[in-house]
Structure formats: C-alpha cells, structure tokens
Image (tube, rainbow, N blue to C red; front, top):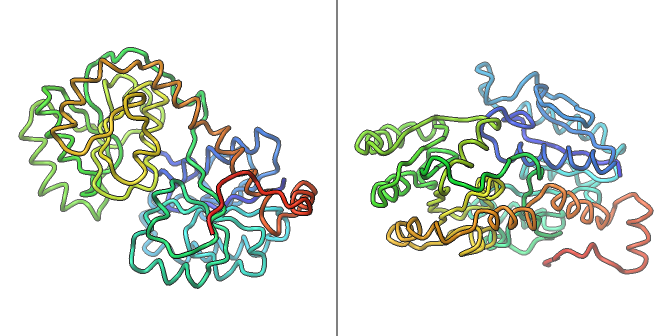
Amino acid sequence: MKIAQIAPLAESVPPLLYGGTERIVSYLTEELVRQGHDVTLFASGDSRTSAELVPITEKALRLNPRVVDPIPYHMMLLEEVRRRADEFDALHFHIDLLHHPMTQDFAGRTITTLHGRLDLPDLPPFYRTFADNSLVSISDHQRLPMPPVNWAGTVYHGLPAGLLSPRFQAEDGYLAFLGRISPEKRPDRAIRIAARSGMPLRIAAKVDAVDRAYWESDIAPLIEQYPNVRFIGEINEAQKADFLGRASALLFPIDWPEPFGLVMIEAMACATPTIAFRCGSVPEVIDHGVSGFIVESEDEAVAAVADLPKLDRAIVRAAFDARFTAERMAADYVALYHDLPGARTDAARLRRERGEGAGLQVVA
C-alpha cells in the first residue's frame, strides 16, 4: 500500500529525548517500510526515517526557542497533506483532532490514532460532530469517556524486537522511574515506595515548564530528603536499555487514566518487571505475577518490591515478544488500512465485496 503517516511537530520522529507519540510513529513507519509498503512521513525536518520524509518545519517545535505558537505550523502540515492526499491509499493521522474538518472529502481513506487522554470535557462534543471518522484507541480503557464514535479497533503499541536488549539479572539493584515529572505520574509515590522498601531509586525524567512549580515545591525537596534517591534528568534512547535493564523493577505509580504507558513495554523488553498502580491501561498491559505486579496502594507496592525475586525475567521478556513488538503493531494497522471504506487496494475491494472485516475488534 501507499501510506501517509502524519506526525505531530512537537518532537522529531523519532524524538531525541522524551516523546511517546513520535516514537511510536517512528517504529510504525520503519516497520511498514520493512514490510514493503510505500510510506511517506509528514514530520519535522530533523526526523530520521527510511520512508519519504516531507519536512514541514526545519526542526522539532519543542526544541526551537523561536517558536511561540505551534498552531500555524500544524496548519502548514495539514495544507501539505491536503495537497498530496490523492497520492495515498491510506492516510494515518497521529495529531488528535486538528485535521478532521479538512479530511472530510477523503475521510474514507483516513484513520486516526488517539494517543492522549480522552476524559477532557471539551472532547465529547467534538467527536460527536465527527462521529463517522475512523478512530483507533491504544487501549480499551481509553475509550470509556467517549461518545458513540466509529472505532476501527484497538491497537496496542509495539517496539522493534531488537531495540532494547534484555538483561536477565538486575545488576545494580535499584528501582527506576522513567518519563515525566508531573502530578499525574506521581513521582512522590515512587520516592516513598523506594524509601519504605529500603531500595535505591533512580529518576530519569524531564520537567516541562508547566510542571516546574510542582517540581520545585513537591519533588525536588522530597529528593533532597531521601539520600537513596538520585535524579538523573532526561535520557535518550541509547541510555534507556542500560537504565531500565539494570533496574530490579520499574515503578509506574500513576494517578490518572493512562491511555497506554509506553515505558511499561520498554521495561518489559529489557526483561525488567513493572510495579504499576491499577489505573487506565495498566491491567491491559501488565500480566499480574508474570510481567510485573499491579497494586492498589503504596503498601501493596512496597510488598511487591519484596516479591520481585518471584518473577522470572526471561518470562518478562517473553511476554513482550508475544504481545508488544512493532511487527505485530504494524500488522494490526495494515489490517485496518485494508478495511477502511475508501481504501484503494484490490485486497480491500475484494474483502468488502465478500463482506469480510479486518479481524480486529470494531465497536459501534
């Protein structure tokens, strides 16, 4: 198929540091190319891809100090996609909602993966207006706040199988927190869990401007209070395998409806179990007692730390290989592309004539 991937412009594809959506767009794009599809990536100019790159900006917006308002650049992105739309059998958007008014003339060839939280009050009226557009959720739990829409399927994220090498021994015996410093990610819980369990904690995370006050008032003083806690800052992809692989466990003490939680499968790929609070997608990603422990409280998390030796790290990695590779993710999306009502391929036409679906869950 000839496929367009339309990425956000905040980060490059893949991102240099933090950026879950752009990272998934990269993994999907590269795997589609590997499988023989003709892929065009609309993204920032500093992106790196084996697909055809259509650069919209010189570099990612978050790293460009001259950028004040990202909206004009995304309007430029949409105009370039509109201009070239007839070239593609399927167009896959990863930019949430900006494109829906513009794509109505070719909506039958479009699919949109919703990467963020959907429990915000402004979203239901929007999606009721564009209820016919094909949407993809990244967990079943993510769908719960939405009005009736055209769900094409749920596709869990995946990573290239060889991206993160597993370590079957926790070499340095610490707990890891990886991601972003924010109230909903609850790094305060991670610090208390580590302190109560007597384990060192290493925090590799970025601090966005919007969370700077929370960092300064709540988290930085807490780190100063506990000598077992070490703040590393933001790390890149090359550092991630070592950081996660040497840890005894990843702490994922979230307090919000997490749509997916990419870091959980990154840890899984490193053969590192996750101790996660039961929120959002967590029960769909973590197999309790296999790839980690799902807990309801800090007390249960501390008890789970003590139970980590019961988990076989080889089985943790096997759980990743079975469910969360980029190859599986791309195959799921290709099935959805073929099943789009306007997909322009012989396979899609024949499937529709036979009354066959793509074989994934479809919810009206």
